[in-house]
Image (cartoon, rainbow, N blue to C red):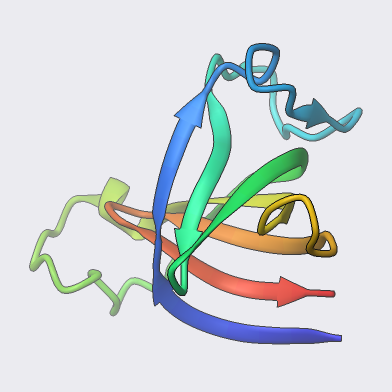
Length: 112
C-alpha cells in the first residue's frame, strides 16, 4: 500500500559506508557518483534511519510551477527523488519512502 504526502522533512546526508547504508545495484541513473546519500530523516517527530538507497533520479516539474520562488531559472524546476528503505528505530518495521529535494526536502510517498 502506498500513501502520498507533501510534508516537509529534515534530512541528513552522509557517507553511505560510514553510516552503513546499503546501495542497491543500479540505484543511480547516469554516470555521476554521489559521495553523500540520505542517512536519516525526521518526520512526524520521529527519527527514521535509512538502511538502504533503492533508487535515485531527477524529475522535472511542469514549467508553470516555480516552487514559489518566482525564479525563471530552469534548474529551479528540477527535483532529485531518493527512494530509500528506512525504519523509525530498531523496533519498527521497514518502509519505503520517497524523499524529494528541490530547494527543500519533502516526503512525497510512503510504501509499506
